[in-house]
Structure formats: C-alpha cells, structure tokens
Length: 211
Image (cartoon, rainbow, N blue to C red):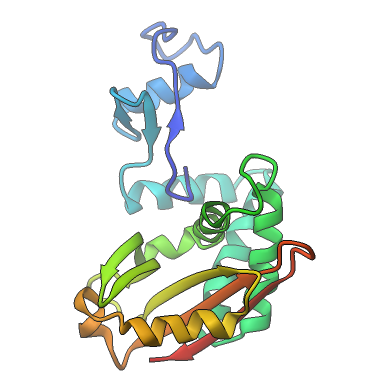
C-alpha cells in the first residue's frame, strides 16, 4: 500500500472494538473506521487515501525494528536521487532488484510486472510526485509519468518501458511521440527515462536524458 497499490480486505470478521484482533483484516478494518485507510466496497479493496497518511505510515514503520522496511524506504529515496542526477546504471540495478523481488507474485516477463516494480521502487517519490500510468500525451501514451506536486521545483519525468530491445530505443520512442499535451508545460524541466530488460538474462538497462 505504501507503493500506491490496493489490497483486498475482508471486513466481515471485525468485532467492532479496538481490542479483538484475529488477523490483518481486522486491523485494516479498524483503520478504515478511523479514517486512515480508504475502502472500495465494490472491489473490496483498501488503500492509503493520500500522501499525508502515506508519510505517517512510512514514518511509523521506519521507526520500528523492521529494519528491512526502513532500508527499503531509504533505497527508494536513493533511487529518486539517482534518477534526478542521471545515474542510469545505479537506477537500472535498483529496478532490477525490485523487479526480481516482485517476480514471485507477478509474471516476470510482462510489461505490467516491470511497471509495478518501478512504481514500488519509487514509492517514496509520491511525496514529490503524482505517478500516472498510461498518461495520454502527444501521439500516444507515456507508460509512466511522474508529475511534480504543486510548489515544488522537481522536474517532471517520463518513463518508457521496453523488453528485449534497449534503453536507447525507449528514449527514441519518447522523442518520436513528442509527449506534449499535459507534459508541455514541463519542457525545459523534464527528464526522459528509457528502461529495458532482457527476458533471458533479466538484466536491466536505463538511459536518462533531459528534454
């Protein structure tokens, strides 16, 4: 959920008190009642409703003995810094690790899997960005668009995903499609990131350029 995803929850077992907790569903149901989580009754899924609550959850887990969670938060912060600095090799290695970690729950050789891995890897970037899948722009859709939040000076970021090609091909596609529209106002303060992975070796490559 810190990565912006929704999680299925069963609210029927909740005992309507703050003492009796039998499973994680009971805990999440209480958080729904307290307003910390948003519940979609049609999909029976729960999510963190906004960035302020997400930051509170992030601070809570980083201050516990969950060392691996705290490390993941730091890695996510470092990944955004590396992206903004154009450190493409460092970015590629970080995304490769995250893609591998989610492969057990998502089909690895699938663009949706890579997209999910990227959003998860950049989950702390939601402090500074709104992350949009398939943003309509120019002559097509940007696979992922990171739009900076108001009153920040962060650059916008377009991410194009490829497999069994190369990162340069992804960058060329961004340029050919002239992703303007909603992104036009960011030109001059816009980064393009092309990410490719090899299905056989699972090696990821990345190229980052200024638009």
